[in-house]
Amino acid sequence: MDPDNGVLRVQGYPVRTADLIVHLRSHGTGVFANYRLAAAPDDGPYDWVRVDLGDERVLFWEPVTARFAELVRDGLLPGTVSERTPSATGPGNVIMDVDLMGLEPVHVDRIASSEQGSLFGWEEPVILIRSDRLVDASTVTP
Image 1 (cartoon, one colour):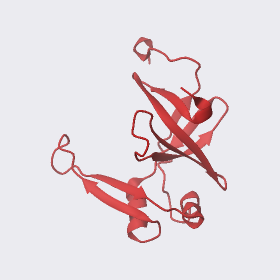
Image 2: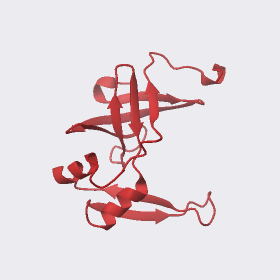
Image 3: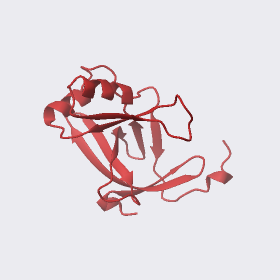
Image 4: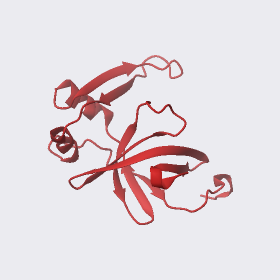
């Protein structure tokens, strides 16, 4: 871990630990985190989320992929949309990938505002709580 350089360790329940490279960016009143696995190649793609930072906790909301795909297809955001069917999920299960590229301030304004409707999964936040130690989640009782 190296928090000063954006390398954080995240642990989930049940046991799932990952070292992430995280870059926080603010725009207007919005804060966004771009992240990737620390073990991924340096030029690998980043995922991103909308963030609310607290003293001892972080809330984040994932983008609604279908909404971002609409904005890319309608020419309101620069990027590409692709679909794939992973062999492990079977026929009929399609995963949509949206890659945003070359965002300018007007595009980030569009994402940060609510003018295009709900672009984030507000009803399903992920909550991270600060801890100075990793916990063996197998010993925790729900």
